[in-house]
Length: 289
Image 1 (cartoon, one colour):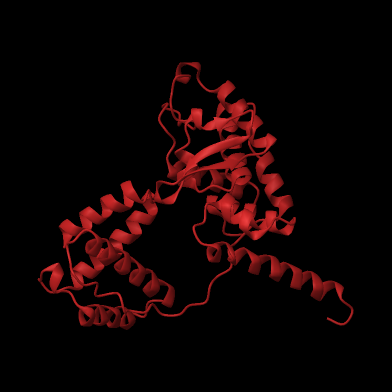
Image 2 (cartoon, helix red, strand yellow; image 1 turned 180 degrees about the vertical axis):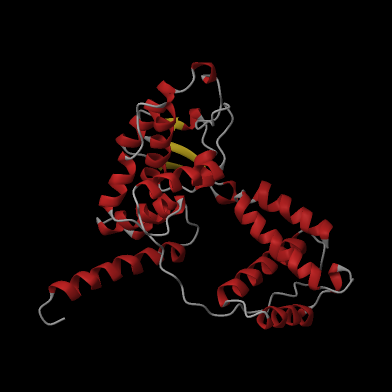
């Protein structure tokens, strides 16, 4: 089982280009399943074994969301094994994940985003880096993994677009506004001159490509400094990006393209956010609400 998990990990990392955090979650779920299994060949795992595992998970009083995620991990794992010919039948094919309420994404209002963008001290090199990171995350609405993967050559300063490598190793061009372009320019001008030939756009203090953990620490630093109470992560800026676009009249298909979503249904969650906002405005403003 561990050998197949290793192959699956390579598939997620190389072929699917999933973030380290996502891969870690998948692999953790699979090792939990592996520990539950009797010592048997992977080809012997059937529908009943998977059902017993789900019963085991329910006995631990896990949330529906956690169980659904583990079912998703197993489904993708066995689909991979079947695709590459390691097994003939997929034992998870007829397994249904528990229904769950879909949580609305957390986002920041426009004034809070403005304060966040203005928080870094541009008199320091680290401040110009932080400014460029925050502006690019919000302006392009990209994922953290996409941000740290950007090379200097991926930024078109004239057209105002940046090339990013998304999930499934799919490239797309993400528009960035003037403020993000200027922030990146300012960072490159202040960056250590001996690193001018570095491939990566965002570098740490040692001249190495910035990692996702560093970006999360950067966002956390300014969230605490501004005393923002919401539970905010770099992905919150992506949620804010999509919500603000829809609030200002962007159509759903365009937002889908900008976010790099494969399915429109993934993007539709943001319409619920804007609907909730409109209902709130209605309740406060309508005399007979």
